[in-house]
Length: 110
Image 1 (cartoon, rainbow, N blue to C red):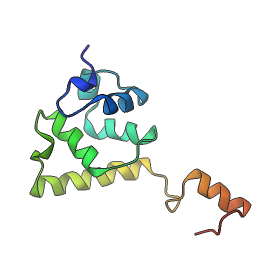
Image 2: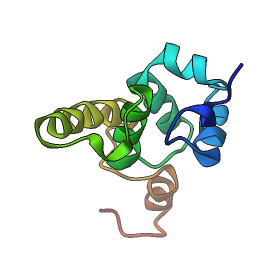
Image 3: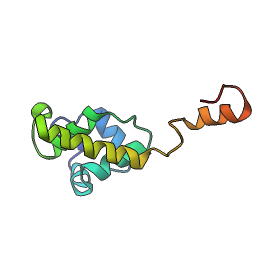
């Protein structure tokens, strides 16, 4: 089975991140698709980043990462925001640590 890094524009860092998310081959990544795969990355601690998302989409289409422009890029931004919203709990943007520190009074609540 070909590794994730065999897909154009996806290197060893993305391969390691996907392995952490349980996606260990290029075919598994293709089978899951970009939105579900990116959601799994976010759920395993990857910081959301729009460029990383659209690089993934372009890579799975076999296109250069910088081929995304105009209306297509705007549509991908909408998809990215939807994926990110699924992964981020509605807690006002607080990390679990910040929320805990607020509860015990170490920080001023936001």
